[in-house]
Length: 163
View 1 (tube, one colour):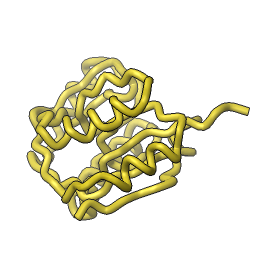
View 2 (cartoon, one colour):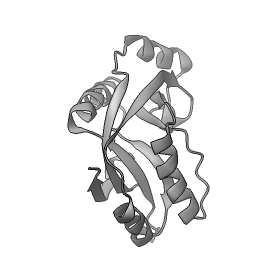
View 3 (cartoon, one colour):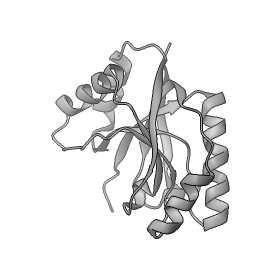
């Protein structure tokens, strides 16, 4: 049996997440890509679920805003087309908590992906020209998501509202 792998996600508010989710669903339908919930991965992989829950429970953080630096694309399937976020002090602080607690190395590059699919550069750039996204989002939840296996099988196992 494969060991379960978890990721720490920051989740946009229902209103902001809803607008991002519409873009994800539209792109997923058009390009036959998997649908996933809008998020910014703060750390991955995590193998110790209990330790991650403890860190989240001790986290004293209110909801906060993130600013979009740009809409970008890459040939990395996890960053096909994405909202590149400004790495503000709150994002850095939360990332450092997990970096210090876990031996795994995670190259934190704050972003919110809009599609997971291998697409050529021309298609990726075309998608960007058609996107009209907000420039500021509210993050109001932190979650632990089981990210072993395919995107469709990912499951939130723990969440805390930031307030």
